[in-house]
Length: 342
Image (cartoon, rainbow, N blue to C red; front, side, top):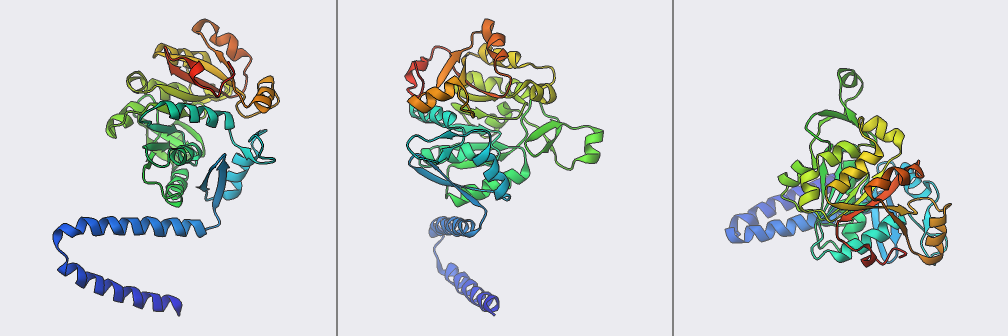
């Protein structure tokens, strides 16, 4: 009964609105369109806010929501993965990858006009946080290969009512070729793959994406689950021309061997250095059961080790699991970042 009544009401509104538009001067149309777009955004935000598929995240004084089609899966990944880093003085509240968040806060404060790209956005945790941290005043781009995650990110953007956070559905590699995506993994497509996987997409390079959208990113976060090698090869122009800082999750050797064949972790770090960056191994990243974790808990400071080319292999030898690498433009004084212990 209610639905029938709503349809009648909507049809009546539509006819009245159409009649009004007939008498509206042409120059007013752009203002009407803007109002309607705002009303659509408001309606979508309220709709997704009522769905029981949102995860509220609080980081220091900022609150935002992540939409997930599988809320239990997302909350397990974000809320329970390994040992989380607690937020100082917040009791049992936790922040996922808090050290990376603290570094981002410092980096964003250094750029007069920050343009952040979240490469391998998953469900938009970093892109959403940066958009909120910047009060939606500067452009943020989330690049994700998995269409289902992209659908969630689109809803997250609407849920938080962001206007400057944009989504790009793409697989990034070193050249254009047919590739498949499955969950967070990406691989080169083959005839055998075509028979098994329906998620096939032509890859692009980060350089081509940046050129297509006329972007000049200065801060990147990269988490591509082992595809670091080909991705960075396809991003050389971007890294040389505009990027000042990179937060790179360097995955374990097993991931690199599987998804970046022909590359090693040493090669990947050295390639970044050759593009004009100084690289630092950051600790802690996710776990606290390390000396670096103890320092972070006591002092709220992050430790780092500089990675000269001749020492990269030696430093990585002690890091068998995935690790966070901070790359800064050569000549930048890392002591400007007060999140680190110097």
